[in-house]
Length: 352
Image (tube, rainbow, N blue to C red; front, top):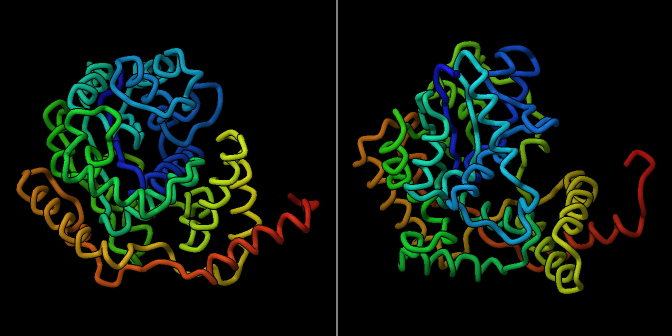
């Protein structure tokens, strides 16, 4: 059985994909044993452990998913992952950002399933001024088409109503009220700590160094290996995000499935947008939301400080910057859409 499990639970949009890709490279470069970060539990390479741990949470009735998500799962993904933990004889890191939305009973179910290995939980936390735009962008990349304003209005309504406390499907604030998230997992795990994501513009390797300090695993390199930025899930720009929402809206209205839409998105992002020399600024908050989100962030920052949970990094990283980007204008969205149309007209390249 594993000596201990370091369980990284995200939440989403807190450098999770970057950290997972670094850990994957550490295994591939033989910096750590293959058993320390299991990559092949399903007969294929996975850079994280979302499949197995979602399967586990689903089997316990502890997670709410979109009706067309993970429909193939039958418990085998969970069993394979737990077998990998059981067969390891040292420390094991598991990383699955979806676990951050679990209620206390779900957290307890995961920790119990990993027993008798003690579980040390690592939470990565990023300021809401970057989380909210990035979360909506991911919502679009998952094939949804909810307008940005409507998405923010729903988050605001949920923040006030606290529906996450009663409704399984309302998981956003279970994940991003960091103080409550940390307390919830600290109650069932051996330990829990919070690693803050450095402010925008910081050296990307700093989040790795902080995570490494939290994980306390022999062999993890002080300097992270270079990671392909596309593989690390780099965000779209503001204009590209709005154009993508338009694609999703029309495609889904015409009856296209989520899988087909996401395949088109990948082609568009790779060839239509990431090669543009001037892609424009990233998406920020609407001007009328900045003060509200800043107040939320300060409330959560104070709650986390009062929790007594160990923090690696600085609580100041969780403050919303006064320099947050804004919204794209119509010309920028038109240019991004034009790049997509040009891709279509040019047809497939020989090297595609």
